[in-house]
Length: 245
Image 1 (cartoon, helix red, strand yellow):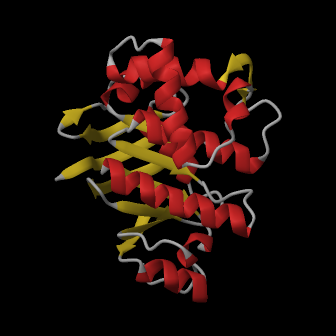
Image 2 (cartoon, rainbow, N blue to C red):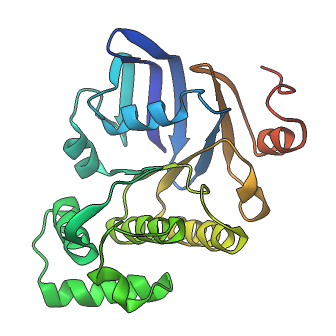
């Protein structure tokens, strides 16, 4: 089953075209990588998929689980099961991790979970991810290290269980231990939930710990190549210039 279906999508910032005629299919339970050099349009693509108002889908369609979300605002896309892990998430002074997660959980599942039930659920997910108990009393991303920001994104993924997770450079800012932990946790979460994952990166660091089901390469706003994980290995060994387009 195709979870994400993008057909002939072009994206513009104002009147300026940035992404042109991209088509991509991502089945449920699969992890695909979107790779490309710096400035190729990867983050623009991710933000447009999530409905960022700066990025306009000028052409084409975005479908999630058979539901056309092309014209829907971000909160409707999130409610339908889309999740974006941003490369540079903003700090939210005054908003604790607990409050963020509880409100997001209620919105995602259209419920009103009690604080006692929520704390029990939160504790279970934190223990699975080996996150310290004092983490949830902190303000969201305020003073967080790169690794702590990734931990919070993983915790949101684990609790909210989106149908599609778009992860914008989850490997950035991590040391070797952090990269290994993040890669292993992503695979565990996907195994438990069955969600589709689109991982956006321009490096191949994660290949030591996870093999994607498919790799797509974006250059200068165009999707120039798609293939198996062998594409990532070729990029690792020879760089983007050697890739046949």
